[in-house]
Amino acid sequence: MCGIVAIIGGRPVAPLIVDALKRLEYRGYDSAGVATIENGRLARRRAEGKLVNLEARLEAEPLSGTIGIGHTRWATHGVPNETNAHPHFAGDVAIVHNGIIENFAELRSELAAKGHVFSTQTDTEVVAHLVSEGISGGSSPQEAAFAALKRLEGAFAIALMFRGDEDLLIGARNGPPLAIGHGEGETYLGSDAIALSPFTNQVTYLEDGDWAVVRRDSVKICDMNGSPVERPRQTSVATSFLVDKGNHRHFMEKEIHEQPEVISHTLANYLDFANGAIRQPELPFDFATLDRLTISACGTAYLSGLVSKYWFERFARLPVDIDIASEFRYREMPLSKNSAAVFISQSGETADSLASLRYCRGEGVPIASIVNVQGSTIARESDIVFPTLAGPEIGVASTKAFTCQLSVLASLALRAARERGTIDNETERKLIRALSEAPRLASQVLRLEERFRELARELSHYKHVLYLGRDTSYPLALEGALKLKEISYIHAEGYAAGELKHGPIALIDEEMPVIVIAPHDRIFDKSVSNMQEVAARGGKIILITDATGAEKANVSTLETIVMPDVPEFVAPIVYALPVQMLAYHTAVFMGTDVDQPRNLAKSVTVE
Ligand code: M6R
Image (cartoon, rainbow, N blue to C red; front, side):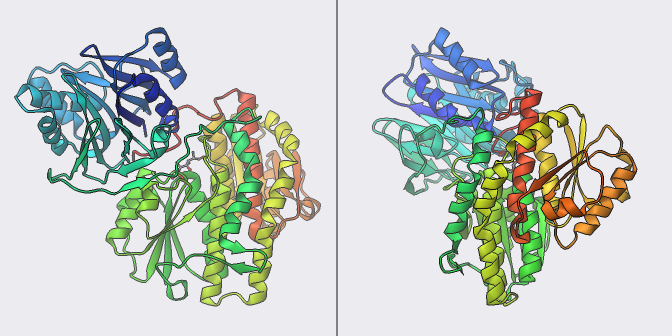
């Protein structure tokens, strides 16, 4: 988390740094700051809260200087106030940092014993002091930085600036990404290529353990042993346009509404609808002979993987192990040589997903990823990438990335089924036809928005909500609860409907509405039984189903929302929209910050 930027150029850099930070605000928005070297001195402006507060501060008190560093923060160590906001200074050293320094307490005590005085609660300030200590001992800034970096444990991306040398920045990466941008007489460091896109499309990504000595006209990259290394310069495709909300109140609303189009683009990238055929790149493994598939991801991306487990196992008879990446990475799971791993991530930077990917790499397993941000670390470290064509997703709550992930996974499950010979041609064509209908069905669901808005008004009066679903609607129940918690701050739980009687049924009363996601499918009757159990205990049921389901449910509900008839295979894609709209409108009624909910960040680059 946290976004970092550094610029060394020939014009005042503070406004450029703020421009770049706007593109990084998705990484955190607790506080922000910029530092430059102004008239030979380190100078900074910082502000608690969103970047607009820093902009206002800079407008009142501008910063001059042609070298500078900037930061937008997601707090790890120390409350998100101005004191703890980056950049931090120690002696002649200024620093911005993304990540966590795990041994900061030990380093801090060591430095305190030498007389260093700390003014923040952050782990970052310790690094500035460590480098400053080296400089005081007679080392050059480069020598001091290198010596300090070797002592750091944890995951970090760092940019350092030094009073006394206005032609020097040092960047270092161990975990979170850091890109170098190459301009004309200007050089940049940034957490991603999007941040640098207004200035240059020529970027070099540092690899783990790399550190770089950056000057206006030169860049030297070294590995963790201090030996110079070559890293390729690439042309980034990141766009310099800041995406806007169009006519929508929030990015989340816009992104919900974009789904018919982006689902259609994504599906068309993997399926040839005109000929009813699968059209996909070659794989680094063979579905036909694979023993198992291991899927790992976090949050909403994990839930898309959970839906796909049902698809891969049902249609392709391919067993799937799926894990939350933060668990998988330390579980030391033995992986069969005849397996493949799939990682799903909107940002392509999620620390736990990346660590899981590297674990699989170490086990010699071929790696496929489903990623929305092109050029992201997960994409670059995979053997094959299946992009989701959702376009930039700005709202912290993932919506269109989720349905695009489902679209890719459904296409892959079909391919696996065909290559394993577990479906016949007729079934394959039928399933492809079903997928081709997903965008149209998603549009129809959007027309029901007013119903969901009304229902959201009701939901906003409750403190707790339960979501239930069976089969592929179970991950959707989890997703509904996650969305609601995340943006409305209402406590919500998602459960497999059949699990209700094993505990959560004790919660049922008039104060806890139960949202049941139940298209009329093979096991609809089982969901009806679970609804009866809820109704018998005075629970208020909100049923989301289709016309047949509404007719057959035979249970009294607070609300029944009738969805279009949907082929069972694509139901998870289409039924994702109601849970998104419900969460969105509830949050609007609650008056929360929908696109940037408290305590969260779009890209989670710490574990
Ligand atoms: O970028 P990723 O897809 O790897 O992110 C994973 C989760 O952090 C993310 O899906 C998160 O759960 C969303 N905010 C949920 O809406």
